Length: 399
Image 1 (cartoon, helix red, strand yellow):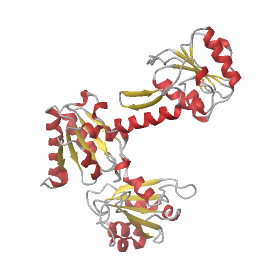
Image 2 (cartoon, helix red, strand yellow):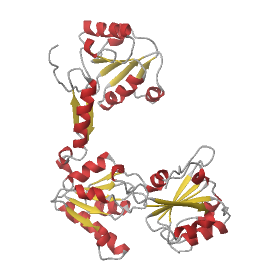
Image 3 (cartoon, helix red, strand yellow):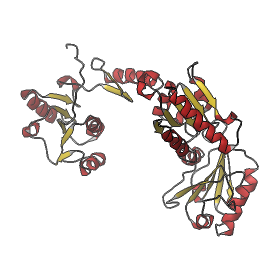
Image 4 (spheres, helix red, strand yellow):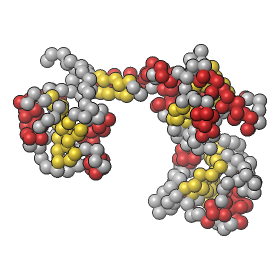
């Protein structure tokens, strides 16, 4: 067999035929749609995922077997069926019309192959391995691991901008792929104490690290100083990553930083993170929702108490809810929070738990009831997440 000739296709606005509506088509169609192809799918039945795309008008579904007329005007054919005879009939018809055809059943009988692909931002890596899918995937995965933390995959256009990156709940492996890639490209990293500290050890030696926990200001002035640093460094032509714990917009003051940058004319990219409100309970064996147990959950900031004049929380309404309450930054005010919930009717026997430093090797959790929480809190220290609701006892607890 001759060597393959690698080629990138521009499919934007061009018809592509997919024959088959099963698992293979489900894997292939999203990439075709992302490339802008006008997907025409022929199959008697579809997977739920493909039917959803058809119902949304993102592809045209012909609910029947393939006929040669389906090739009219098509630039590329993807045969996604296991039936060898059916696949051969499609590829033979495509061959007669000089249309390249990819086959899932027998790649060696096809006129085109799909490579193993890894995508990182604007960078796409396609690997062909002489007909060995296993080898192609293995090589692809090795390259993908390198690209995930390679600054070369980040465009130069990020210079003079700020990225608000959610670092996740603590485990460094829970940062998003995009977040880690942007972190690797940073000229300046402005980090919270709750961000995944181990990732800072991976920064280039020339990266300026600003530890905002050490800024000698009160909370309000400290935020102003953070805003100043973000704007100043970006305006100097540097790429600034604001690394936060959890998600930038879940009690992370990310909105304030976006506004400060916008007022200064500095572009901002927001990279969502895995919020501790959901992930930390999950790591401790607590699902915040569970069928027949909780159909809603509410995330509350407990950094100020229920009686504080600046509190925006409707605590009486929360006490009446039947679902899960997740309280962040609430250990200091937990006695007042519990007293308020009990006073407004929440059952004292409601299962409750506190999880300290969730998802890290220092994770510790304690379980009890709502009434027990103030005493339980004495065993732990921040950062910790409080969970109140019947979901606490649904699954076996994880320490």
